[in-house]
Amino acid sequence: MTGTVRRTRHENTADAASPPHSIAQNAIEWGSQNVWATRLEEKFRTFLSTQNYPTTICWLMPGDVVADRNRYLWVRKRGPEGTRYATLRYSVGLERNFGVELEAICATETETFACVVVPEDVMDAQRYLMGRGLKLTCRVERFATSAVTSSLKGRLLWW
Image (cartoon, rainbow, N blue to C red; front, side, top):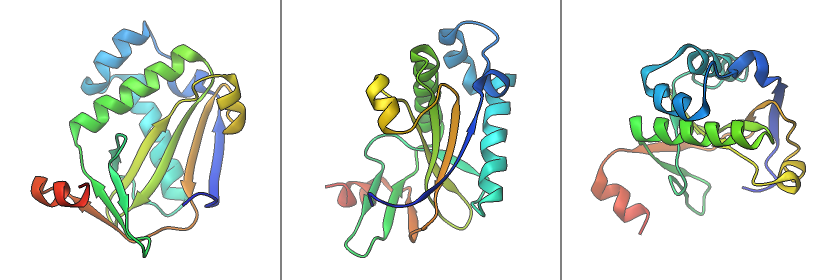
């Protein structure tokens, strides 16, 4: 799916997600929905709704999406584990100060599956056209998607 056009919106992280205290503390408190994390997710939800994506967000981890030959996507739903991983990635992004991207990978009728992209270094940030702020993206071309919650079905798909 490389080469897929994405809609992008850049924002300054200072107003959207400035942590009120240390990054480590922020990663711990995301699960309790502290104020800055809630505001960040709300900005992403607003962006998603303007792009006709569902506003319920399921955060992905590496290896959670499998595509077949017909570009049908199978996505593993993680729940709180995915949210914790997204929080950790976001905290790493704040620490590195190369920018953070919230990217909608795919969606069903009711849920958007997204990930947090953090550049490894300055060259990586340039390659992904990242500023030092927040970048919100989604794919223009959407593919049919199914969420997998059964562990057996998931094992068969990812085997």
